[in-house]
Length: 250
Image (spheres, rainbow, N blue to C red):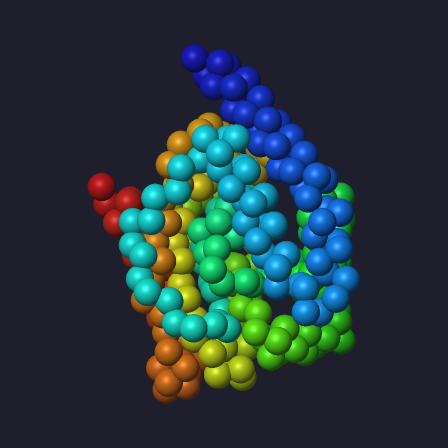
């Protein structure tokens, strides 16, 4: 049984990657055209939603919003735990009415499909280069002024072990929220790590199923301003972590 699960999981990962890549290649020319002019850029979000929905439909991933708190008018900063690439693949279809760009580690530029899209629209963060990191911060401010929201995984990447347990948050998202005076939307994914583990983890699970997500109440700019940076980080960590702890207690 163990070997059957091993074979199926890795075949499923390969299938998901093929679906992701196929639609990414098919949509690339159209997205590239929309990104040529500033006034067209936000329309690219609709194509990213189509890409995201294509993965959901072709790979039989059903999204269940266990909690779906109302969202403020954008722009805002979206943060969530990060335990699977599905957190990236499905985010656009989870928040289809709110165009956003990802702030992600610069290592993503090395991937053929993701790297191309990151260069065109999203914001790579260079952690080991202070000058480039500062430029990413400035670029994030500029896109918010243009009406885009920001999507940030404050863990800085997928933890290497003990999923879905989170690792400490980095401060970037919270510095931006305070500096830009915009709300924070916390999200929690509780099952994505089971549905699609890291492809490099050959013994990790992968299968169709229900992706459960909690869209929590937003933190207003007034609340964010009233908290110190450390207090804000702790509050957001606790909000996102609570559904994970509830699952563990069951």
